[in-house]
Length: 397
Ligand code: PMP
Image 1 (cartoon, rainbow, N blue to C red):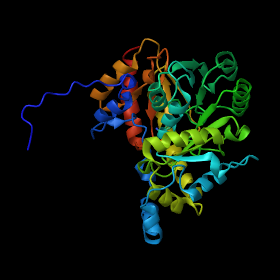
Image 2 (tube, protein in one colour):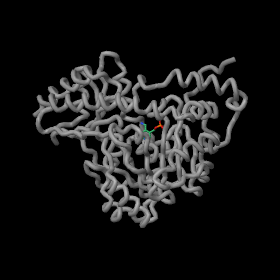
Image 3 (cartoon, rainbow, N blue to C red):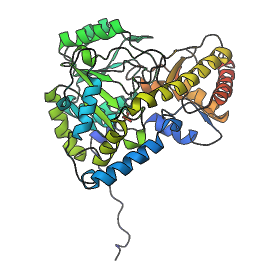
């Protein structure tokens, strides 16, 4: 039985949903999936780093030994042993993080959405870096904030600016390690000054840190979480150190916020997949990441160097770029008159792609900027792609 000639529905979308836009990056990714294109556009980790065999073995162990538990519903706050593992691994620099302070989430992207849900009202002041992670701007935008772009330079956020602008704000969203999109790192003194400024203002400081473990050289700088666990909300992820397809991340925060976010999470998806959490715990509990992460660092460091060398060789005078000490991204600044959105169209014709910088700005986009990712492209293709881009830019000078 089927109704004949039904009237099309007149969709009456909620006011909230009108804030939603497709991510500019996802739209670009669709074009750049074509095999002939050398894409520096994606933010995807390199599949070469995915520990397929380790995950296979972990799935097998979990399903064989604890299948009935792994396939059942689980608690909203997460799988106990994994919360404890996260708490222990973050208890460094003299700080003690408790498992009760850890909420497991379905990717740290969900953590951003839940934070927005419980902390942002329409018109709330929300402070972000200049530029900032597009996915966070998107997640927060749904709740109708008033974004305040905090002045930032090549070393990241300028803490003294927070003192002036931060009164009455709901949160400050920061990315201290190998920032997406710029690759920059917040120096130790600035971390401390930022934590201090936020503590004085009573302003929750978000420390989003999916790339922290991917430092090319030394050990990463101390976490802001451990400078003030009562005032910092830390977000971590297994996406860049294990695999993103499992969608597993965590939020570490003072208990009142964790409880509120847990209520929001219950309404959103009841809990993060129990099977995934148990498998990841099985995969990492015996120190696997200590041998696995150095292999990712080495690969990314080599490819980053290949891109930096290529930029030095092929990009014309008047362009500049960041020199990341970890992570997945380089940020390029072109002469003021070059719009990277228009440049992308020409670049795709030359079979090379990147992400224009404008969408990463909450206010006043800088159209002469762009983001390059080097982790999924082998060095010889990096060189050839950067050469083509350099020629296009030089032709506009
Ligand atoms: N924060 C930042 C800064 C990111 O770059 C990403 C992933 N692109 C996320 C959060 C989301 O990561 P996850 O896969 O854990 O949801």
